[in-house]
Amino acid sequence: MYKLVAIAILSMVACVALGDMMRKSIVFDASTPKVFYCPQEKPRALDKMIVKARPVEKLCEFEGKGLPKGYKSDCYNDVDESEYACAEKQRILLRINPP
Image 1 (tube, rainbow, N blue to C red):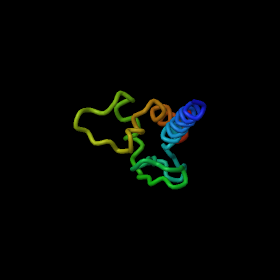
Image 2 (cartoon, helix red, strand yellow):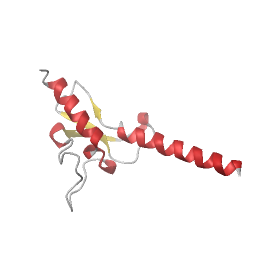
Image 3 (cartoon, rainbow, N blue to C red):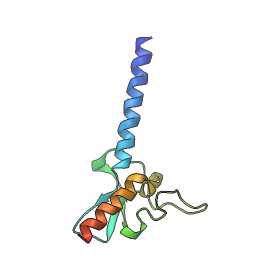
Image 4 (cartoon, rainbow, N blue to C red):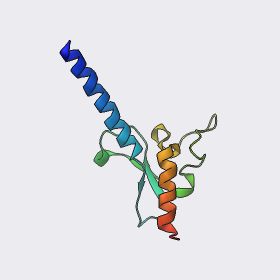
C-alpha cells in the first residue's frame, strides 16, 4: 500500500516538473532580438532541447486563446500560445523597446 502511494506521489512530482520545463521552454536571446526560440519536440532536459527560431510576432499570435482549426503550431505542444508565452512576449517587447 505504501509503495503504491509513493509511486503516485512521485508520478505527480514528475508531471509538475515536466510541465514547468515546458512552460519555461520559450527562450529569448538579447543578441537576436527579432526572434524567440521554442522546442520542436518533447524536451527531455533544458540543456538537450531542440529549438527553432521564430519571429517575435508569432509568439502569442492568437493571444493565448488556442489555435484555429487546421493551423499547424510553431512549437511543440503549442507552448507559444500559452498564458506564460503571452506574458513572456510582453517582457521581451519591453526589453526591445524600453519605455
